[in-house]
Length: 342
Image (cartoon, rainbow, N blue to C red; front, side, top):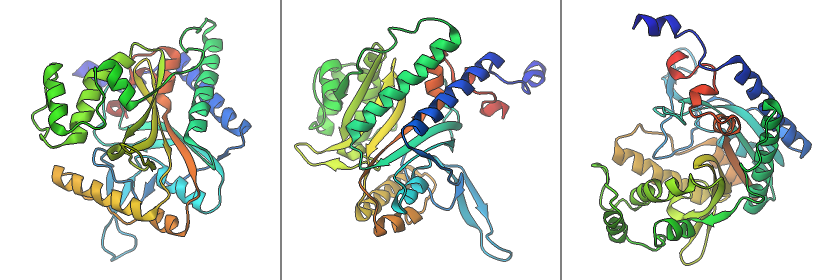
């Protein structure tokens, strides 16, 4: 115990790595500036918060003035809400490098406070943003290769392949799942020897999909240098647009680098009525799980009622990108003071 206290004031990252991280961050900023994106800043602390059944924000309770009742304020899990308000106000192409906060997320790839790069461009389609992500990853890899004075060829294919959610399940689990019932998903888990956690309800379809993705698909994605996963279940759209079809799918993608999820991209939802409905559904899921209550109404909802233009956006975990570029195996190796030393 004494030894852990003696060293807890020290950073977990080497000075050399801090310099490399700074160079990679400068590459990111130059990348967006060269492409006409405006760097913006939005509040870390807000009365608005993105409602997600599986993300818990840090909540502060403050009095706006003397004698007033306490009101909840939230450390942002993402700058998404505020950045979309800027788009609704007339911004065209914006990016931000900021901190985000997610309670309880600790592990080799997680720290409750982390650095996020988020960006949006009005008029873009999701496929254009996928291409931009690929360009950004190549730019940071080139910087890392120069810093380390060693060849990094082979880490990326000539073109990063794109697999739909169903194609990935067909390829790695033996069958597609987008049309599968809960019973069929449970049978697939049983046949593949995937044990369900005790709290997973038999009718929680998204829960079973996530379990099978984690157990059967993601381990195979880790064997690939890089891959885009696209066309997620419509029930997992978050704030992405849903494309009608049989079945309908979320216009959403994630990039995996050696199995590590690096970013999440959307063809953004612009319908305020649908936004309100989705937030209500997420609030119901949180209530059923016993999670903290979050406000359904927001300034983003008001902004969208005035009009949010068609756009596409991406949120990228910068710490994970640095890990991949520098071949680090734990987030503690690329940030100065992780949560237990903050």
